[in-house]
Every structure is written in structure tokens, then in C-alpha cells.
Image (cartoon, rainbow over all chains, first blue to last red; front, side, top):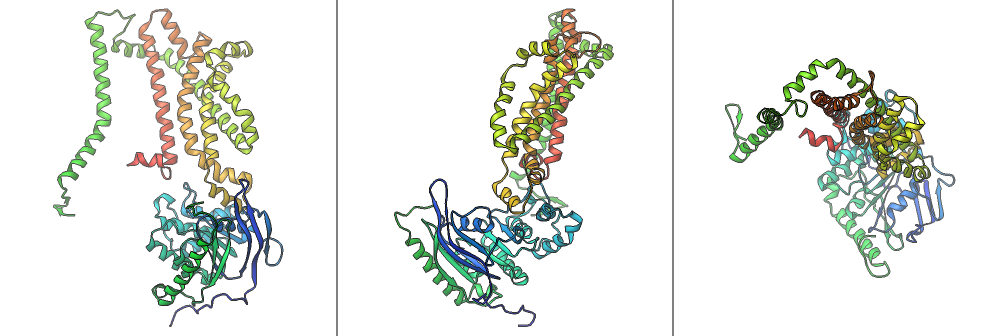
Length: 274
Length: 282
């Protein structure tokens, strides 16, 4: 197909390790074991989804990787030693989490501003990033003037404006309607293919995780742990055609089965929520 | 939508809604004004019908005339009261915001000192004044201290609440980006506290005027350089009811103006982003 980006093979075992979690556990002061003995290797360029029911510790894992929380046991090994500079991590929360009083432009400026970069100096990077998330022309709008999807785009632009090596996303599209979610899925994939950063994506949607990722790590609850891992070996770019293909349907079914097993593996009576 | 002759054709329900909205817009101003005029007219009539002497209840016209005749005296007193009011309000802002920033820097400081602020607030200022009278010599300082004690608490408590009610995720975001304590205060906590602070400021504006007047009352200060409260006491002694009413009128007017100005400031600052300001627009 002419004009299409070069198809990118799913990151394989060949890609160098970016982060290895070894025997990582987290116990909160109230006695809840959020994570137990998690072993997970994240490779350069991965689009890795953490998929699981609520209470499986996927958000806790993300916070540990971000350095917002420290593990009770085990180690997080960045590129075989040392810790990654926080400047290399971008974080997207479940809510857009924007400064309500600041314009779109100033919201995206924030991470650079905190590093002491002036508005004028940051302007080219901000303008470019806003164009990447299709928000050109909305620079002066404040968050309340934007739709939910647009707010999330601002949030992604803010996370990406520092050109991080790793983008951590905590159920970023869970609150959006399906049409908006599909659109943002596509745009996120496009961004990822162009910039070649690593994504760790927390979700409870089987369909979303399969569509986006090259690796789906299924987690189980009580205690939070890694249950199984699936390689999604469909070529990128993935587009609307992939979304309706039998391959996609088969992969989703496969992932769903694993997820059901993970949920059933939980010992004790089943509770909803945490 | 059906457009005929350039106008929107509305069904009965929508037309009624538009009519109602227009009526409400006009009524918001006309109604209170009409009631006010009616009340003043009634006041005037009661004075005439019952032949009430001027030193008990003056007719509104006489109050207005006094306001004009005694303008020099009354307005110089008003200036004195205004000076105390605004100085104490400014000090309340500085003290209230300063203390609340200090409180949010350390939970320990807040736990230790917040009770003192509450004690200061709940003790009636009239009861504290004799003490202030003993310890402070300067008249202006006395009045300022009084008005300040009354006015600073709403700013302190509101701003503290605002500084502490920052979204958790936003705090994490700042942490992730390696923000310093100062950056977090400057770019996150202070702007987030703004609506709360402005709410407190609106209350404190009225209270600082009340504080200034009450302090002067208790101080019982008289003389050329004193404020409206002294004019009221003085007029009371002399059974000069028209001047008493005129002074009262000036104080109320000042209070209303302070409230309106602070509301306007609040609206201008918040109108783009805060819910409270959005409702007013619609």
C-alpha cells in the first residue's frame, strides 16, 4: 500500500530490556497485599497492557513503575541497574487531570515549566505536540470548554511533551464513549509508531488491550499477581480493518478466556470491587 | 428550525420560556427597587400621619438634607472608617493567606496553631477590647487590631481548606515532574485555593467594616479625627436622629459597595474556569 507507514513487527525478545520487575510485592499499611511476587520484563518499544479485574493491583504496579510508590519487597531494575530519571517517564491518569484555570497551551507547558523552561522556549515543542494530538487551534481554550476526548488528548500531549522513553497510562480512556475511545486508540497507536517510545497501559477492557498491545499481561486479584501473558502477534499499523477482522475477534476470545481463568483463580468468595 | 421573516418561529412552550426569562431579567432590578421606594414612601407617610417629631424618627427627605448639610463632617468620618476597614482587610488578607500557607507547609504547624486561631475567632471582640485598650496606646492600632481579629479568620480557614483540597492526581503529576515545594505552591496549590480564598475575602470584607465600626463604638472615641461610629454615638447623645440616620445610611452603603466590588473581582478572576462563576453567566 502506497503511503502507508512501514509495517512494524511486534517487539520481540530481541529488543533490549528496559525494566525488569523481580519478585515485586506491595503490602499497604492496612494489611492489604496489593501485589505479590510480580516478575515482569518490559522491553524497549513494547506496547504492554496490564489487563485484569479491579483489585488485581494493576494500578499499583503502574505507580511503582512511576516511582510514586515504593515496593515492599523485590526490585525494579531499570536497564539492568539504577533507576530511570523521572524526566523519562510520562504519566496519563484515568481522569484528564488538567489545571482547570490554565489554557490548553499552558497545561501542556507545565512539565517543561517545572523544569524551568520559559514559555517562549517551550512554544515550538508545545505547538508541535498539540498538532500531533489534533488540537491545533485550541491553544487558548480552558479545559471546561473541551469535550472529554479533547481533554484526554491534552493530557496525552502533556505527558509526551518532554519526549519520555516510557509512557504510563492508567485506564486513560475508560470514561470515554466508544466512538471517542476508538479514535483515541488509533491516534495513540500512530503516535507510538512514529515516536517509538514504550507504553505500559492499564486497562480492564479486553478489546482495547488486544487492539493496542503487542503484549497483554493478564493479572489476577487477591493477592494481585501476574496470571499469564499473551503475545498479540498482529502486525502494525492496526486500523479499523483490523478492528473488524476475524483475527482480532479470535485474539479477543483468547484473551477473554485467560481473563476468565484469572478471575476464577481468585481464592475465596467472590466480591465485586476492591 | 423554521425561520420566517428572519425570526425564529417558536412553539408556545419555547415562546413562554423566552418571555419568562425576559421578565425575570427586568424584574430582578425593578422589583427590589419598587419595594424600596414603596418602603421609603411609607416611612415618610407614617412620620406625617402620626406627626412623629424629627428627633425620634426623621422623614427620609430630612435625612437626605442632613446628608447634604453635614456632608463635610460625615464624609471625613467615613474616610476614617474606610481607612481602618481597608487597612484591616489588607492585613487580614496578608495574615490569613500567610498563615494558611504556613499551615499547609507542615501538618504539625497546622495542628499546633489552628486551635489558637479558633479561640481568637470565637471570643467576642467586644469582650477582648478592654484588654487591647490596656495594652495598646495608639488609637489607630487599637481599632486595626480589633477589625483584623474579626476579619482574618474566614480568610485563614477558607484558604487553608483550598490549599488542602488539591486533586491527588495533580499532586502526583507535580511529584512525577520533580516539582519543588515552591513550584507546587505557586503553580498548583495557590491557584486551586483561589475560589476558596475569594469566598473568604467576600465574608472578610463585610466583617472588616463591622469590626471597624464595633471597635470604634467600644473605644468610644470622639473628636475631630474619628469615624462614623463616633458620629452615631455623638448624634445619639444629642438626639440628632437625622444625622444618626445619615451616618447609618453611609455605613450600609459602604458595606454594599464593598460586597459588590469583591463579588466583581471574584467573578472576573474565576469566570473562565470555575463552576461558581459559570452559573452566573447563564
